Image 1 (cartoon, rainbow, N blue to C red):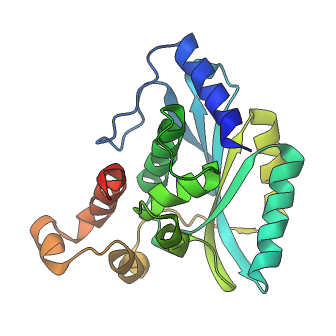
Image 2 (image 1 turned 60 degrees about the vertical axis):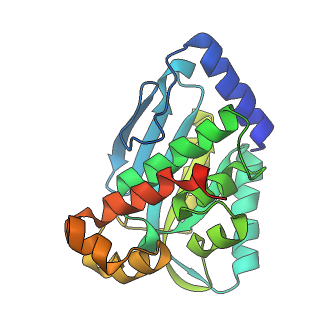
Image 3 (image 1 turned 90 degrees about the horizontal axis):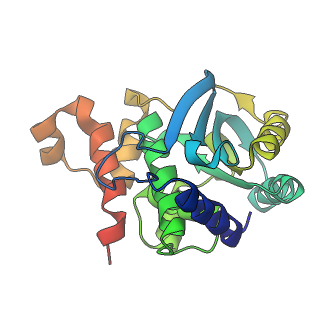
Length: 222
């Protein structure tokens, strides 16, 4: 879905309820947003003040990609057929539910304020999830050829999102992959440039919080 459409939806939200606020320094759900698990592999994020006109589902699972351009065309076809945004991310570089949820909120907020860098909502979500201002660098958190642990972000109107999610489930082996785990450690600290002294200062269990700090800092990067 084009960012202009999301801009219209978000502008409508702002007019309907002035409480739509996202604190860029906070990883919690802010006023206007709620999230819940529909299943162990699917998270639903709703924008309350649009009375259900817009939602985001995050579907996780494994997928084997032989030809990346062909697979991306499949995602684009699902996106186009349902008038939604579909963005695939490397779940091995996602440091938990709060990380991806915050990235989605930041991207939507950027579009609402017309401060987005990417013209595509999916790429804007990827940019924040990667903790990068530059789109080229953000692509490193995307899918790749071979076996992928993936997180698919689907955004749009509720019925369309549900339909697109159903089509994605036909090509994805659903697994709960969002939680941070030791198996993700090396990929995450490498991607987000998290240093040994940082980890020593806050503790291993705070690595997801260090990632969220990187997401929060995207808007001040040059």
